[in-house]
Length: 429
Image 1 (cartoon, rainbow, N blue to C red):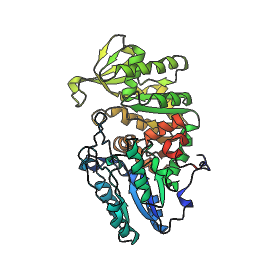
Image 2 (image 1 turned 180 degrees about the vertical axis):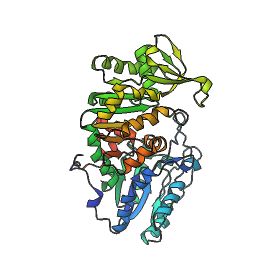
Image 3 (image 1 turned 45 degrees about the vertical axis):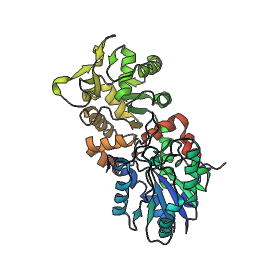
Image 4 (image 1 turned 60 degrees about the vertical axis):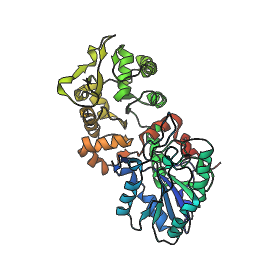
């Protein structure tokens, strides 16, 4: 792990006594109104307790899910993306109690303004220590959070007016929005403990001990092309899964796979050409084809050997890699002997197609010589579900590290740790 950049202000260097601290966290763990996995919440307890023990008054905020319609710009609010389950969880775990104020909601624009007057009585109760903290509504319910216009600037100003300090502890929230980026330039700001920890561990991926193996999957190739090209330069071997692997196979073998866009295949051609000379990509030998995208029907599922592909063939959905792929000596030996393994992958479409993910997690768990770095909420959730023995062992094994944001790691691989815009916004000139 590397030392942090000396330009990065740290929360432990702030005098928090009697000060209001606005903390951006990444508690994006709610799915359909239920907490899917509390790992990201638990990871911020250090900051929450620190603010309280140093005499500060915490105000927390996070985004939950995707609320803005990309075509109309309308913001959808409701119980499925509310912070209420998070507040309930915090109040079961932390003494003092958090309160979530409410604001008027426009049916299309969401919360048009964070009115400081609405919050005034809550702030008074907070400063009188009648409550332990405030928790703002889902930041993506606010009209200015993602809009990148005058409303963004207004929201940032309103947020800054609430507090003496801004602390970013949301490594996984790497996009430059009002609550992660704009507000940082308006009041004294610093990095929280989790953000510091994540940045330190990023060095293990950015400057890995060799041999370095990366396992990367995703549902869209175009969103991963930049990070994939960068990580390809660093790795000794790369294993692909999900739609990314499907696009690679379609490009390399000239086949058509259901659910893979022609644009993704075109992008994958570049990686295919690059790998012709370097041969870094290890191809799981078997893929699981299904006629149905949503359900598992044994009569409509079969395993196909990649070696049987012929140009021009058309296939249904490839929804998993065959677990027998990892019996092959080359892949098994590469994973077993790697000194650094970065995993940002669910190999198949869960919950019905998970055998490939379960098997590769077991193979990674058998590696006793390297650092194993897992990125992303989905990756961690599936590791828990599909390989609980590996997960439980990892909790007490310093050779493992779980990042709270896989997308943030991939972005940092492309831009550098301090190229993440919310991190850059904290740096002193």
